[in-house]
Image 1 (cartoon, one colour):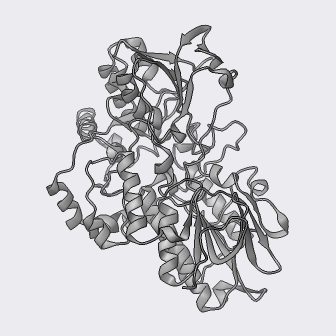
Image 2: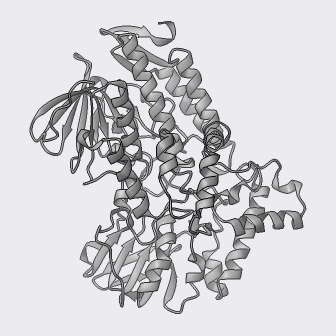
Length: 553
């Protein structure tokens, strides 16, 4: 590996083989692989430490919705055997500590520049390199750029009249103060009822003198049944890791090890079906949707699961009117990312918690000391914005990326993102995206998908180095065919029936296109492996500015 320059790069020009944007789980593993292959690399991270989304998302109750023993790296046997997860679902501080441990254990920090944003990346066609401008005034040149910017890391600030005039403190769940917040004795308003609100509401309610939850759209949530892990449970996972990892990569649809369903919901009678749902509800977690194999394909089957959860909400919530407002009725269960909670619905039984329905008229205005909705003013001291993210494309869109002919990636993606395999976009040579639109990404255990993408990119770079190839780019035909395939597969499911952030529906003006690939983690991996085995079919490679098609090289 070539010697890396000092990380004090203010105003300087430095050169690397690869520039990686982001030091979350994707960026850390990408750097580890690149160093192991002898490529010089620099990672730029806008935060002050590693961790990505787990560095920024410190809101009360924040934790992963994938079991901790599975939401972890598999590339190091020693790491997965040595690290002790404390709970079934790890809380944010522990996940951040894990990321920090990985950075230290593998000596990654010397090649990471913190508190530095990548503001612009422009491809120099004449020299075949990327020029990357950073917020510290520096410029990095690299043959390759890898965007490890994360799918849920660009917090969405709502456009609500008067928000800037609010006299109290305003917090966004995606940019929570690192020192924490104490709501004791305060009247608090939470806007939004997605995953971050569902996790934080019970914790905030336990502190606040009164909590108002402003709900536009109710969401389905399954109890987490979180618990401390015993040493026996950790040992059982560790002993079975080879099969757990194999299944997650090759056989699962979502990258999670679980017993796959073998029958459809309507093949069972009502009593048998109810018993199966009860069992899944009691066990908790995302595997509720694996009770049957057609819940996301057949609306009648989906209705049986949705009705079950609505009945559970009615059982938990004492006030019938509140229970009714909490029962989702405008999308099939699972077509928005299903949430995992601890006592979310039960929190609305507290006398000091009020659910405010803003479905019809929205929030009219934020006053200096209140939220006005439905003609009523709700007096609050603090405001929490649980309004989600500009998912999948938002973090990429913040960077001014210019490819061949100076064309902006934002311009190309103006009517929806276009990629080949979610890995590259035509017109932007040597620019890779980790878990980008057109890949399973947010429909999967993210670390399984991250490792697959990083390994594929590392293999591709090694392939190019062995053959002295200078550039790789997705072909127009391959990209168009892949985009069509992603949309075709999505239309075979119930997912497009929901106005979800999978579709960009939470961002005003964003094109309504189903962004992730729903064909499954195992299927997707086989497609990517087959593309590589055929000499990177669908990609065009060049050496010394002379075009070569990889499939014939």
